[in-house]
Length: 84
Image 1 (cartoon, rainbow, N blue to C red):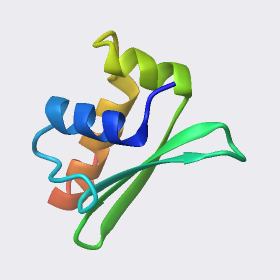
Image 2 (image 1 turned 60 degrees about the horizontal axis):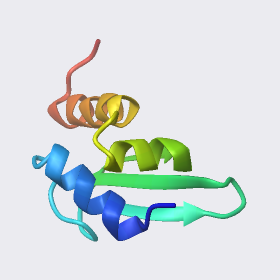
Image 3 (image 1 turned 180 degrees about the vertical axis):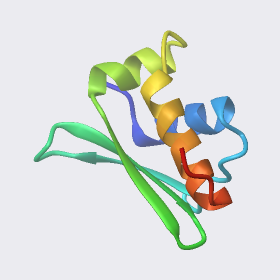
Image 4 (image 1 turned 120 degrees about the vertical axis):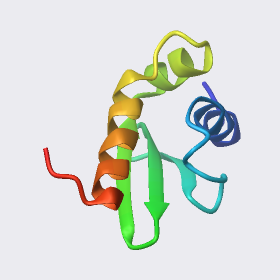
């Protein structure tokens, strides 16, 4: 299984507009949910995305990060005040 640091660094690599690990993005593993929690923050705007461990591994392998990309786009839209 991936580590939180590996996932955070991969997400920053794929989406450099996010910011920095530990500041604008934090990745933790929730044992109770058996899921990665990707916490995104920009000012007052926050968003938590739950990522299945297999999806996290696939993302690290460069196979897919689609659902996470959609969440990042949603956060960006919230920050910019766009409504869709």
